[in-house]
Length: 98
Figure 1 (tube, rainbow, N blue to C red):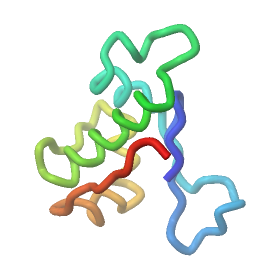
Figure 2: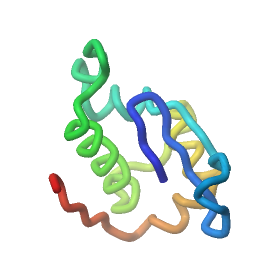
Figure 3: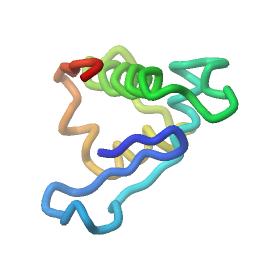
């Protein structure tokens, strides 16, 4: 998975990373839901905010805090790609800042 402020890209495990992503979705709903007004800043959210939003989104879905919603292109992409089934029931570990 590659998450950018505007789009989220997902490759199947067997795909070459240099190939175009198999799945692509708008990140807008994730950014709005997890960052609120910060998502609409000129130039987009800072990298730290983007990392926090994506990790919170994935962690909430994996941990069952929320279910995918049809109105979210990003949620639908996770379901269609099969990634949601692979992460649900799990938890997300992150290491912020390097």
